[in-house]
Length: 163
Length: 122
Image 1 (cartoon, rainbow over the protein chains, first blue to last red):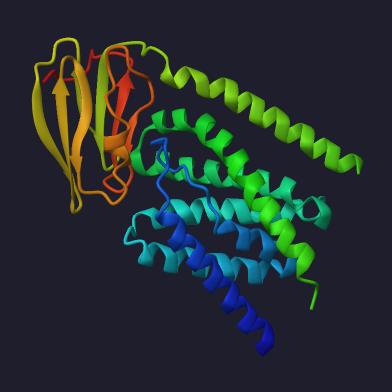
Image 2 (image 1 turned 90 degrees about the horizontal axis):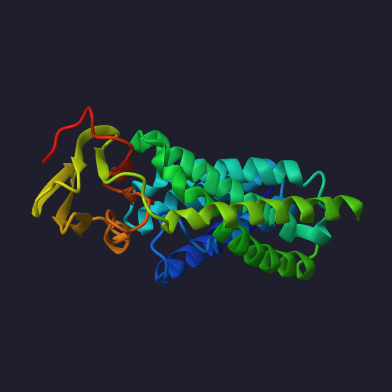
C-alpha cells in the first residue's frame, strides 16, 4: 500500500468520524431504536466506489471502532459492526452491477442491508424476535437516508476524479 | 441502463412493502400482557390488565432502567443509557402500539406477549 493512498484513507476515516460526531448532536423526532441519518456512510459509499474493497473495509472498521469510543456508547459497537459489514458486502457486490452514475441506488440498498444487520444483531442480543417489529420502519427510514447519503456520495465521486 | 431501471423497481417494491408493513406498529396490541427481557433472558411476564401501579428497577451490566406501570400501561421512566430511546418510546399497553420498548445499551426489551399462561403476574 503506497503512502499517498494510506494518507488519503486516513483522511477519509477522519472525515467520516467528524461527520459521525456532528451527527450525534442531531436529535431525531421519532424514537425508533437504530434509526439514524447515517451521514458518515457518505464516506463509506465514496470509498466503495473509489477504493478497493479491502481499503473500504479498513476505513469503515476504523470509523466504527473509533466512533463508538467517541460517542461513549461502546454497546452500540456490535450493532454498527454487524450492520456495517452487511452493508459493505452488499455494496461491494452491487458495484459490479451499478455504475458510477447511479451510486444512490446502491447506497439505498446498502442502507437497507445495514438496518437488517442491525436488527438481526439486536434480536440475537436481546433474545427475542419482537425487535423485528421495527424492521419495516427502519427500512423506510433507511431508503430515505440511503438516498440522501447516496446523492452526497454521488456528488463527491463526480467531483473527485480517479487518482 | 435497463439494469438500473430494474434496481429502481426493486427499491420501489422494498420501500412500498416496508411502508405498508410499518403501519400496524401503531395499531392495537393483541393481548394485554408484556414480557420483560433483560440480557436475552425472560425476566417476567406481566398481565397489564391485572397489574397494579408500581415502579421497579431492572439492572443489566452497569445500566439501570426504572420501569413504571400505571393505569394498565407500562413505560420506562428513567434510564441511564446514552440515547434514552426507551424513555421516548413512551407507554405501551391499552390502546397504545404493538412496537416493543427496546433499550439496546441496557439489553432491555418490553414486548407485547401473546399469552400469560406460563408467566408470573406482578
